[in-house]
Length: 61
Ligand code: SF4
Image (cartoon, rainbow, N blue to C red; front, side, top):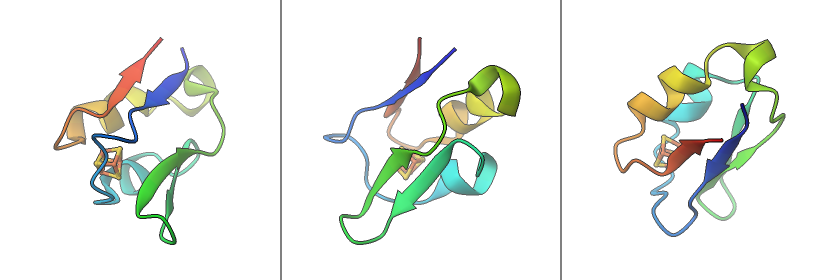
């Protein structure tokens, strides 16, 4: 699985980076999360990150 972040929805809270730092990175310059490494299967924490996103901006494909 690979994560896709909806930048329109992202409010830059940083939860995804906190829950799954191998995959997600909060770009503080633009106040949006970015995908650092899309390998969710290796990281094993994308689902938790998606569940903890307050605006449901993360989808897994
Ligand atoms: S948890 Fe959601 S809203 Fe928060 S930074 Fe990540 S993608 Fe953006």
